[in-house]
Length: 343
Image (cartoon, rainbow, N blue to C red; front, side, top):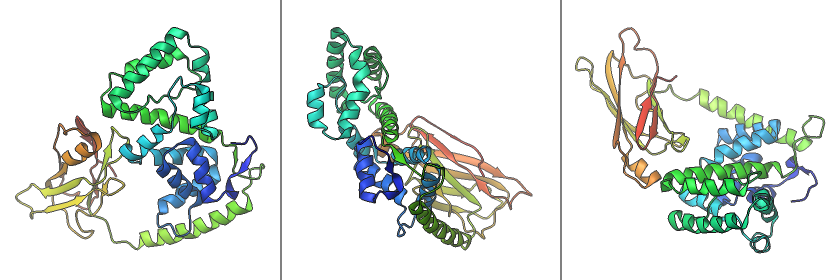
């Protein structure tokens, strides 16, 4: 990447994709971040419009924030692994590294490892090479660490500690290290988000104008939607730090004195179920139970059986409070779960 400043708002989607690919080798990551920045007029996602407006108005910090949201929303086995494959081994020969990674990412990788390599003794390098092999044999990928500014001894101690991790726990650690690397590289792109005086460029103003128009349309559509269910929920996967999609949720009324209720739904891409009941349905005082059928979700995301195949949550609607809205979320991980009353 050139050291000259690049006007962010003059870049096409394809140019943004190429830049972001140098920061992270996941094709899906680069594509979605470019889409978020461009906020094309044919996009149907109001969330992407809001994120793009934030990026254009708040510059690099907002770009990094959007990158984090996108990264942790990706498919681990496909997109994260693709990103991991775009890295050289710690301690790779600089000449071979440049041959394998001829773009700016190769230069960046050498720079990121430079302090560790400069402080490494022959014994440390030998042991690090051995641990690289052991790590790859156990986890099936190279060891990922944000090596900027750390010593070779730190890297060696880190890989030894992480050898004790389970495959899924190590996947999460590697993902966090990848995100650190991506953030550092985004900041090396020398992007300019305005005219240097805190004012937006003309291209930025045009984009924001389109986004404002689309946001007004989206808000009007949202306001015309039917009233939401008096009982709603959402599921947050606390192991992944993201919403849990595709979980079956059932709702039952456990009070014999009230009319029987038996509803079901599935969590959407935001981990939410908002249509368990109709907006005009009436709540009766008594006990209710939400059951989250999590076994298949945990198996698909971790490769393990869930310790809790189902997560039941019981709560009470008190007399005199039947007109209130009850939002009952689930905080989920493979070996535990929690809940609270939300809003």
